[in-house]
Length: 246
Image (cartoon, rainbow, N blue to C red; front, top):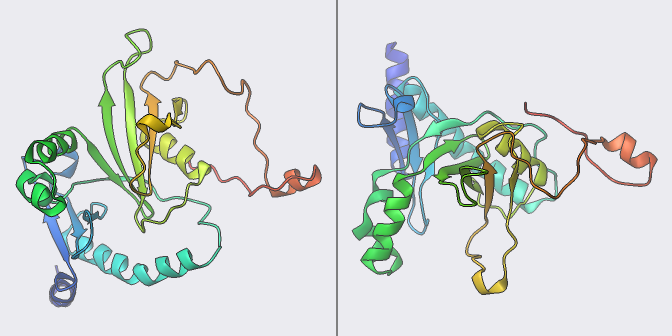
């Protein structure tokens, strides 16, 4: 690492730490994919949970990514105010790790004024999840053991939120997320529940994806048909051009 890079990292660290950024390094106690990797977290007063950055090979790289995240905040706010569509393509997901505060049941109980046993249950669930991050989304993934029986096997539960917390529910984005994290030939579904068991507390979305790529839902279309803007306009419809991520 050059002297210039050391000076740059030190200055970036000083400015970003004051704004709630921390860089973490993966060690033997972490998932194998995080060993020797670095990533940032960002937390400010009033935030329900920390933002988690993608992993990088060096500490300097993690601070550089944190700086880009900080500079992008203004761009994200402008995007939310306007009505422009989201970018057509999505960056790959990388493994990430939640900050240690996310696993502190006592702190969670105090912060959200909930019983300690409820906070402890939430922490235990978080420990069973892997975290995936790209430029726009954070996805927590957890295996559900054969909820429909052994015939169809396990599911992967994907808990999905935009990093800018915007209430955007783009079906194509969810399809790409499913493809990138689980696989393009795995089928999944969302649930629109009975009001008696409705949970609606944040701009967060949930996909349940079959781990076996041979499993197919007994409802839905049987053949593929995807059009772009020009083909849709020819029949009086409206559509965006399609950009596959796989």
